[in-house]
Amino acid sequence: MAEDWVERTADDLRRWTDEHDEPVDVQGVRLLLDLAREEIDLTGPDALDPAALRRLLLEAFPDAVVAEADEVPAILTAVGHLVAYLGARGHADGPALTAALAEIAPEFARAVAGAESDERRAAAEIMTALMRADGVDPADQDAADGWVAAFEALPERERYARVDAYLREHGDDLVVPPVRLPSRDELAVAAAESGLTRQALALAAWAVNRRLTAGAEPSAREALAAVDAIGLAIPRRAATVAALSDLPELHRLWWAAVRADVLDTSGGVGAPGPAQAALAGDDVLTAWLGLFEHAVAAADAPTGQDAAGLVRAELPGVLLYLYEQGGPVPHTAIAAALAEHVAETYAITDGAVVTEALTLELADLAAWGVAVRAGDGWTLTPLGLWGVREMLLADGYTAPLDGEASPAL
Image (cartoon, rainbow, N blue to C red; front, side, top):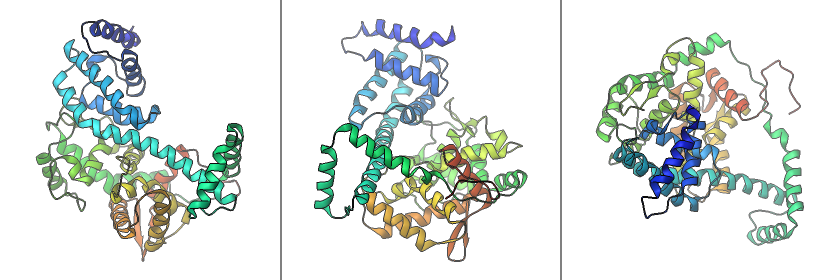
């Protein structure tokens, strides 16, 4: 049966390992194959090409598996053994997968670290709230250290009970104010005419039959040609362009289009994805939402003093802030709210670079048709309101429409 391919492959891998002196984590590889089958619909070992490997490690794994940063080397070793086995058995293009894994490995490490840091950040925010509830100022390092020591000395059951009580008490944080939206037909027109749709369709058209790197991306030279062809503004361009990632605007658009199935890279060349027709046709809203969600998602976990990566990681929070205000918000107010959060969460203190990065993100939202300048401030467009509301609903928020009955806010 088709669904047995994982077990058959794992059994054959065991036989293959008997021919090699180096120990292989067969069970770890089997779990990866299970994940590939369940999360990216891999139909067999022959289907694991560079694009599928990228989806497995950068999308499926961080979403489905809780791993720590120090486990990354062992995981990558297991993937390397899988690649070697597939190449040796003739199931896949071994050199292409090896090259792709080398490109993906640093991004995978950052993705795992990002997932871990998200969990740590959420835990830190809860601890800070509990600390403040006890009358302790988190800025007072000695007092904060004393509170943490006392909290950690509590019995495990009591610690869990305090956290659970806090989460229950603040559960209404998942309720946002009601908004008024235009008709679905009007939203569909706005989505079809949005800058994000135009950019994605133009990039997908440019990419048809273009040869891609082992990492399923255009080369640096081709990427520069794509920027010119689609007329994409690239204010974040690196001084030297050696890879797609040195053109952050194009990198973001490329991977949003790939992950939203507007662009297919599975064959080593660009091709129309299954969602491209929908984006240009009657189901434009569904296709646009997938594109928007992936464009907003952070590419990597922010590290060090990377203000651009940090602000991009916080973009969903900026969108939520705009959504909750119900009208234009001064640019300075958005920057101040973000700077306050950054100061509490990250080791970056230069507010000017954060503000500059925020300005570029807001300009991107405007270019996509998601936000618009209103005097000296910003507000979400009707399409932006709809897109953010859909994401909030998917995250478990109560997001009523104007006129609907809603819980007390």
